[in-house]
Length: 80
Image (cartoon, rainbow, N blue to C red; front, side, top):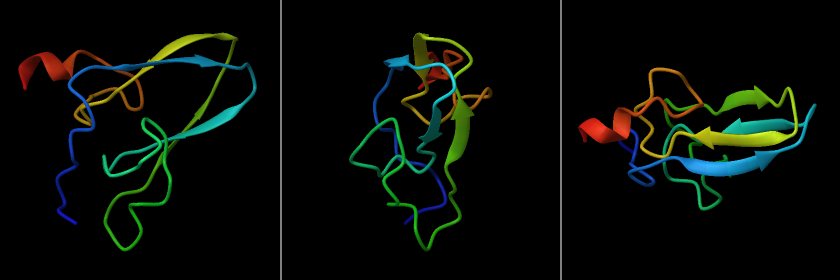
């Protein structure tokens, strides 16, 4: 696995999250459960990012894995 994350998709993943629930965002881009981690990063330099939902709401998780505000989309996909 490269030390550059795979682009899972060139846009955010819109996810309805539940207040108090913990989510683990995939940083490697290899997970089959995007935008969340499935352990595909094992034996690599990547580690998932923990996100705890503060409210029941729609959250936009980064799909390109290039965000400057992990795990949330910051529009970095617009520069790819």
